[in-house]
Amino acid sequence: MGVRDLVRPFERMEYLDPVGEWLSGAVTRVVGGGPLKGVLSGTWLGHPAHPALTDVPIGLFAVATLLDLLGGERAADATDA
Image (cartoon, rainbow, N blue to C red; front, side, top):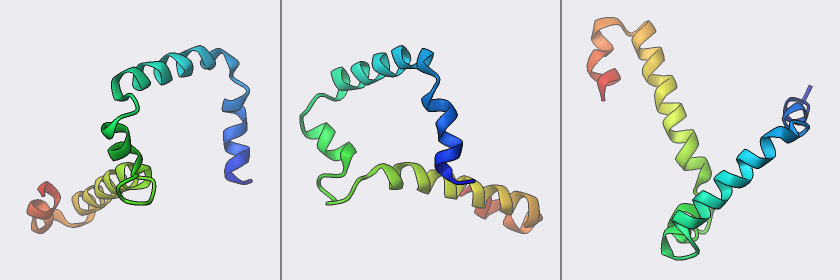
């Protein structure tokens, strides 16, 4: 089973399409096509910014959780940071 197999059920949920279209329009109205879009899309970086904007916080949350579970009191300051 691959990632595509996991995503396919969501692709068939057509009742979510109006929500997605509304969100897309709302984001487009707020961000527009100016410099903010360039910053958020990673144009300045030469690479999409999405992975860093999602994977870094998820990774930090995972590490903090592991420190909480396995590090005990010695890891409290690191977990808080």
